[in-house]
Length: 182
Image (cartoon, rainbow, N blue to C red):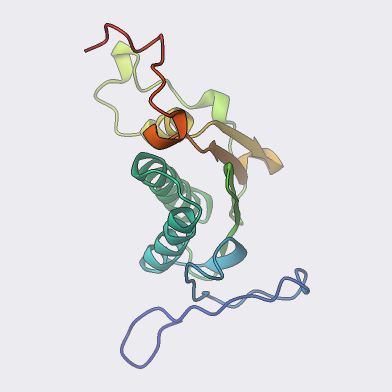
């Protein structure tokens, strides 16, 4: 839904009523975005979700590269759900649940489509697929996140990102795997 100025209108969902129908969109802020759920119908509703989860990660102290990784992976998951799962049918919803805590971000994206078998998506790094335009979103998600899992026949994707340590948290310790990598 949009407000009178054409902007997405987002409102927090009460945690005590998870089974009630979700509104079309949800307003997120760093204060209330540490956990939540939304449903969207179109990619134009994505920025508020992405920004809200990113703000919650900032509040929890996640480094910029972790926030970027989660944002890109989530954007890919939502676009795939809208485009491939729901086939751009705006009568269908994409539901997103998340939890941001100090050590981990967990996100679930579910569409109303028939699903797919992720193992049947061709490897985009294989020589015969380098010119193909599909499959890169899954590769990005798997590369950027700690883990990615599919359920409900591929119509539901769960992913998690474990927070990486900042230089301040390592107290100047040198990672032996990084020595000589300059």
